[in-house]
Every structure is written in structure tokens, then in C-alpha cells.
Image 1 (cartoon, helix red, strand yellow):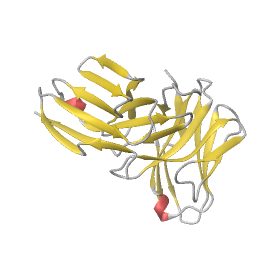
Image 2 (cartoon, each protein chain N blue to C red):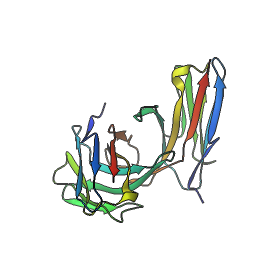
Image 3 (spheres, rainbow over the protein chains, first blue to last red):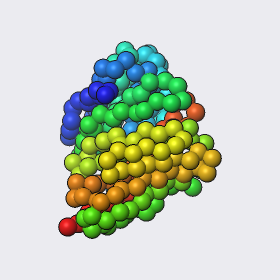
Length: 113
Length: 108
């Protein structure tokens, strides 16, 4: 089974500060994704990547940047954290193609004060 | 409107009873995944489906791409089945669209 890890597992940040969330996968998957989940809601796609050194915008990219320096690593960057970005963030990976299962990391709980 | 609509949004079951959750798609889904988010927040993979059915213990899932829906049947519900169930549709390449979830509470 795919192994996707995230760090940190939780973080408290101040408004206006910079936050970097990291994701690492060990199964040689092409695609990696960042989602956010707000309390009581489903997951929404922020950014994704299908190859190293390239990222694409998802459905809610505003206020977020992404970086894919290698196939294994995918980071989500909040340059100026805001209160509205308090949420749980999930990373996921899958192989390419139309038929591929997605595997999720454990999530990072971010609180912006 | 919602591209992936889950129903019901919430459900209470007594231990030992059966139920069915449903996802309707207004997008062309090629595959479907079902997840359980436990009370601690972790997402667990339950099923990954191309059109057809799969069964695992007390859980059974079906995906009909022509009629654009998927179901998850829970038989003999147990306390540990409590949590939020999500379906997600993969559409043409990279994009995975999630439903809003069904919150299930199983009581003694």
C-alpha cells in the first residue's frame, strides 16, 4: 500500500506569517495533490502536480503556492497566512492514467491565529 | 450544483442493522473511490471501483457509470463503522471530485 507522510501533523501560525506544509510519498507515484477540509465538510482541491518541477492550480488555489522539487516531495506554501486558512490539509498521491487509486496522508491540522 | 452528490447527509443506525449510502454524479466518472474518515480524522480507503461491484466483509459497493451513481451497502452495522463516508469520482486524467460526505453514527 502507498505510503504518504505529512509534516508537521499540526501547526499554529500567526496571521501574516509564512507556513510550509510538506508531503512525502515513497511509491513512485506521478500525481500528488493538496486538499483542504473545513470542519464538517468534504475535501477541496488546492493544487496538484503530475511531474516534478511542475504544479497546477486546483479548484481553490488563491492564497496558496505549491512546489514539487522531486517526484517524492510536494509542498504547500502559505506566504501570508490568514484566519480563513485554518483547516485540515491532506496530501494524496496516485499513479497516472484514468484508472488509479488515490492514497492519502494523515493530514495536517493548521490553526491560524 | 454539486458534481458529486451524496445521500443521506447524516444517518443513525442501531447495531446489527443494514443501510445503503449513495453518490450521484453529474460528471463523467471513470472510477470511484469510497473512504471512511474516522473520528480522529484519518481517511481510510474502503473501495476503488471501475464499473462493477466489490465486496469486503460487511461492506459492498457498486458503481454504474452509465447511470452515473455508486452505492455503499453496510450490513450488520457495528460501532466501529461510525464516521464520515466520502465518495470521490475520478474524471478523465488527474481530477478527483469529492462528495460532501455522509456522517454515520452507529449506536448500541
